Length: 317
Image (tube, rainbow, N blue to C red; front, side):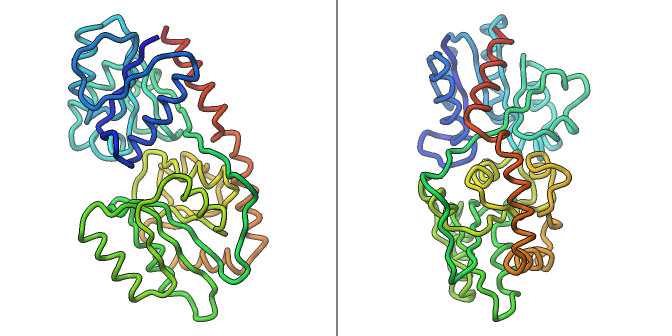
């Protein structure tokens, strides 16, 4: 089957949308389909379209369904679709959702903001992650915390650094931040933070293998976002066996569950600092978080994501 995948993110982009598109293309090929991933739909025929982002891909969605109304259309609801554009640009976002034969979301609380009339189309497909190449190797000198986040306001990217500033002198915590600065201002902020905060290092954008290497040497991963659509870094940490401290938002709760023990209120520096200290001081607490993450491991395996797409494509065709 010929599948056209549309994403607003260009070929060289390291955005979450492009990372997802590249991984799904590999999955579709492994299932025996041919795949073209494009940013601007030109009307070419296909047996199915997978459109990542309801609002940003709205024109492609409209054109494909007008040209090939009998062909299945899958719309992936991105984080900004469900957290922003369904409220700020409801007409084109909802139109894309209505045209879709199926919608894919990345965490299990998206249903709560989906109109009741469209909920039957919704399918949760959790993002998978590659396992580590070997066992974790943790430093005995420092307690290493990893942040994997681009420097965008919605990610609240400096929250862990700010929490690290408030740690007592005897703490061994060190924070390593991986992620691209989207503008000069955010880069300057991270550079300035390194100058003022000896516990914090920003390494900028790095390839996926280097993210996994950093996780291998990390005691803890922090995701501090104000909103998410289902961050792949959560999958990566779970698969790597790294416990997670997460902001208490739907995008994180929809992946880790309501009973997960590592949440803190969004933007609360002191609460985050306290949890960081608790993980450093209490092996029992860390083991509890590790056990909770381990129980979620089947959710984020490559096999699970393959099977989810296999079932959805079979249902549509």
